Length: 357
View (tube, rainbow, N blue to C red):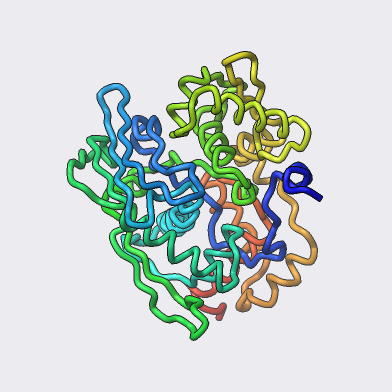
């Protein structure tokens, strides 16, 4: 098979590397700062899969943002996975009523599994490179985050520390300190949190990930949203010519029409106008999940109760299930994996309140 034929045969999705994933303590939330809508007008991450050493400046409606590459290049769309995980942890902590801090520690292996990344030695090396880009990509902007206007230079993260590392280079624990700019955005989110599909982490092409992000932001409860390609070219941060960008978008739209590999949305290209529509499954999951009625319709598998009983600490499972459902109603959000969410909640409840007396 030739290289061209191999590319044609290759799945548009990355392989699902961890099909039997451990419970992810919180839903995966959209990590792009959204407390200020103007910040979403500018692409923060390069679409290049090779080291991108080109400084960037974006301007829109009086807001501007400059990105300066590190010695490893600009932070990439794939590096963003790390921020998604960190912000997810922060949001889950806030929703439990606990204090959040800019510095957090977690197992590197958990992050890699949750974001569908390799857990091999090469995977840990790529993880380190991503941390370097997030730490050293320089950002200067007048965009307000959390009601504050920042005019100094900073990175996506202020620091990272590998707490423990094995002899073959695999991290056991990692400590990351988010930048004030990003942390302010998290603190100011309130209810403005968008849940994204886990299949996002399987999207192979950076442009597909960026198109999904834009669709998720602009086409939440709307039945459609349209962009001129010239506008979309700017919003994605693509460095291709407009002609080449049009070709790439058309190729993505054509493949998605056959494979349905981009979750939640369909894309239609008519000349230079791209129209995005949410799939019916998206409406059912994300729109209905906002109401307590939809939460009441969730039915847990019988095996889930058997597993949860091992961790219930003497509490009645139906009591714990009621508390779990009440928590979901207060969050006005539906976990993608309700069974895993319930088991995780049982563990958390016993850890917080102790065993039943």
